[in-house]
Image 1 (cartoon, chains in turn purple, green):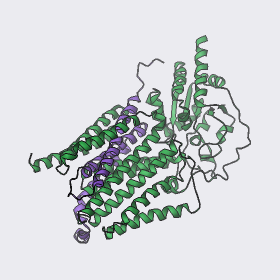
Image 2 (cartoon, rainbow over the protein chains, first blue to last red; image 1 turned 90 degrees about the horizontal axis):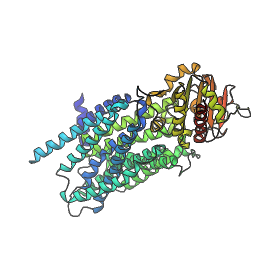
Image 3 (tube, one colour; image 1 turned 135 degrees about the vertical axis):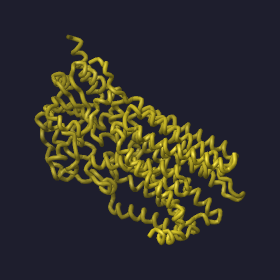
Image 4 (cartoon, rainbow over the protein chains, first blue to last red; image 1 turned 60 degrees about the horizontal axis):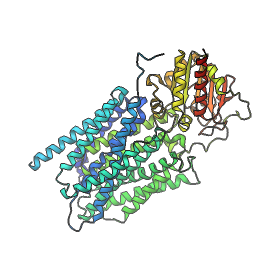
Length: 115
Length: 470
């Protein structure tokens, strides 16, 4: 049953992507499950943390910026990559720093609290 | 190192990074382990970047430039991480913009690179992924900039609507999708690509224009999700599982947060995105013209002093007035007298998910005393005093009683069931949604007019002075 679908998808180059689609779907399920258990107290730090995590696009940016093509390759293609690296770095640095800064503030009431 | 070995090391680094990202989010399930989660994220990022730098496709000659770009980004990032916590919503929106920009640029660069190489690499599926990445990336870019502008009050926070807005929005998005379909049919139609970019940029702006401040928590969460999905699309473009996994985690996080926000407002996604709030307020009940009772901060302090249990309901007003440290003083004064103090947090209080919790944590209020709406509501009838602090719609009984109210059906913190209500407000002006609040005209309610910071400061001072005399 799967075979004809794959055959039909072949010209589109889809079949090579089936394993990646598996990865995507399974990661989404893990993500939904993990996030559902995140403490509601921490939703703001969660957003800044996922900000930093999504800055993993820096991987793609590095691959584009560092691509050494033929001599006539337009120069601005690499420049786009460098700008993307800078943009992603902003998120990595500020995302992790501010998440840590916020989390440091969350304190439990100490049992020996004067009251 | 042989190429095979190098490849294996890179893949192993990516695999470890993926696992660490999952743990990073998993450890956010409690404040006790959350900081470990940040470190897991940092190490995952180091492994991801390090692995990529080992990739032979990255030219050694480009490394200094890569380092320079990282440094430039870091120099912008450090001050962005030091903003006051009241500005965290706009900071978050701004960083979604950076994320979207990075994804959009990489997609654009990849497209032109492959076109330059003859276009054989642009299979239909890859072109589809590139178009998805570029549309999501650039609409997140401009949309988040708009959201940040509204939150920073550079742009008007009120929803901006005009006739035919929906049609124009759909045509814009439809145009971008049509360009994408054209490119999938023939990637060589390069003239379509700039049009696609422009339409995506325009759609981002138009998507946020009609959205008001009260809906920002949902929208920020949704943009978070888009930023994640554009990373997923990039993963498909580059055949990179790490990007797909990290992007999927981010995408599902944004999705869950926006669902929580929508539920907390009893609204659907489409309603938030397309049904500009605040434009409907013809009949919100006739509270206008009724008299309200008011009290001075000192009188309010006296009332709280008599209580056994005080519940404070913070809202955006507390954030605007930066009143959290004064709230801490009040909290200290009350708990010193053996009065139980709790904070009731509505999921959409403030301008982003969890906004109030962070502000109160900043003021050193232990998180054990922050309770959720569902937890506090059953206790409400036993509560002596509720202090509503810059919150409005989240305590509006009309959400329960008045089927005509635009917020009808929204779950609220039932302050109206407490024995006494003290409401701190700058004036009788309605809240963000522009709806009258009958809580303020109830018999048991006393209004304390003034800036939240000043008023709460006066309350704390009154209590402190009082205790000094005894």
